[in-house]
Length: 258
Image (tube, rainbow, N blue to C red):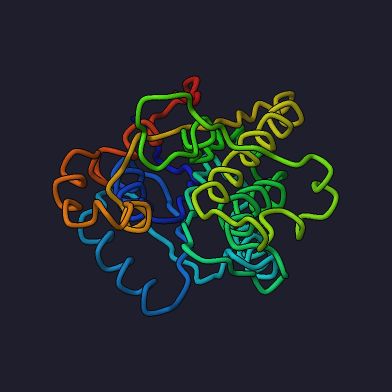
């Protein structure tokens, strides 16, 4: 995998592992972290093992439109072309919360952060003939946290609410994992549209389910009755090192939801 001289961005829970792999392949990696202390720790950890590449950490809150815009503007000011964009920012919230923009937090973090970053970096992605990888989730096909025998419950979406995103995932009838899955479904849907728009310029937009990875989100998803077994459950999942493997392949290869 030769990424020498390439500019790549990786954000979110598996971001440290992704960044280490990309930097080890020679890329100039830009990571987004929410606070300066987190950014400094991340820089130290990744730089220690990163190999020939370069690491740049930017502070930004991707749950807010202003935060996404500020990060994108800084990237554009410092890098003419972006060759790989890994949109991995994600979170799961057990209660109903709203972002600074008045949007339900799953919509803000798990959908709009990736969509906004991709849209704002379009010109740089075109110049880089980039590959965009949106980390999605198989939860869009089945919103049951425990997959017992029976029919799956796919994520649903009220299309009439798409003209006002503040109406998505309302307080009434709020179910956290369904809200999360709905946001991931929106990411896949928006990816199809962006893929059609950017394809003539050599940019590919992909959605990938990396498998069930033992990140911090898993702690929120384990039902209370099963939490005494959480250690055993986590051992049955992919590690944060295993999850990103298919996200870091170069040159671009087809990447689809499993």
